[in-house]
Image (cartoon, rainbow over all chains, first blue to last red; front, side):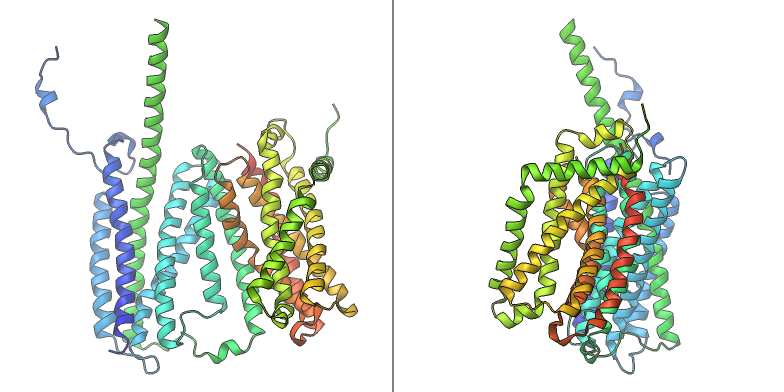
Length: 44
Length: 258
Length: 230
């Protein structure tokens, strides 16, 4: 594969950045979950 | 002395976060589809006749830019609903904010992968054509939108301000696009640089692109659900902290008077 | 008490803004010297004289944009310092009148600024004004100024009375104002004949600038009220 670094790099950047964003969102959500009672979470 | 009851000894069940059954199913489907996309995009789909293997970047680049634009459309629609709806719902405002955050992330990776792709096909990272320039300015504008959301003020103030800004950006996009197109059409040397990124797609390539769009759509839905729930909790947690602070000040005042 | 019309509000705000300006002389003593300084700094950065003549139209509009940020910040800092905008709001003064009053005051200040910057370009960069391009130059400047003032007033109103506004304003205004920078630069290039451009090449840009001014004039009229109300 020519330019393999660029091609695989673009997959890694895309999935890595969005993955990191997703993990951060989940972590923040878990941490906040303790300070908000369950009855205030309409999605549950 | 406090009495020890069976209830007080019980370990409180961990409070539940932003996940639900629905998001877990969507999350699982997203992971499967991304694995599928990687296999089809990197291994199974053929190399392009003109572009060679670099066409594989398209399977992540194009879905991410489509979803970024979709995210901004969602933000605009939610802004309009908040502003013109009778309830001025804060829930809709949080969806607008969550969608813009996700859109900014998607747009950032779009710009990076687009530059990498441009480096291979054009030999340069950037070209001043209308699509690229509009996308870059849009990216900056939504960073500004998120900055407005971070301003001090009540939640209703935040919601109204950011809704207005969200709609003004929509007004801005066609004007920016028009101006850059008019500008570049007068500079013919720009087209010497080379081919457009458009390629003719055969069946398997089209299927890979389609897989990418499905994977990224699921990812977008999952992210916005989690993100907007998280924003709700940030607001509620802030409100509770304020209530507690007020309560302690009030009780302090009571003690002083006593 | 007699009902105060929207036009009266706009006129009162306009006259008040200019009176504040004439008394404090911030435009004359600080902002105009600043913009002239920017033109000198461009010359240091770009060195050769023939380059400067070529890029002069762009530099003029860039200097207008940067100076406008400063003017807008100042114009709304005056309002928010003693909560004047909120006082107007609670007194039930028409927001649209305030918007157009502030807009008109900004237009006047920008026009003064542009005259100075064009003069600086003629004196320092060796730009030649040609008689047949004057109409295009003037109409371009007017429509670009109307658009810029509309944008500046909207975002200035948003940032008024909020901490952190000094850094937020350029981030919000500059992307939105970029079509004006592109359009006004090309149109002025055509008016001056920079790089052998014909005057006829400038008219499509004037169209763009007019559409921009109308779009953000209308958009701002709708947006300003919700932005400043509490």
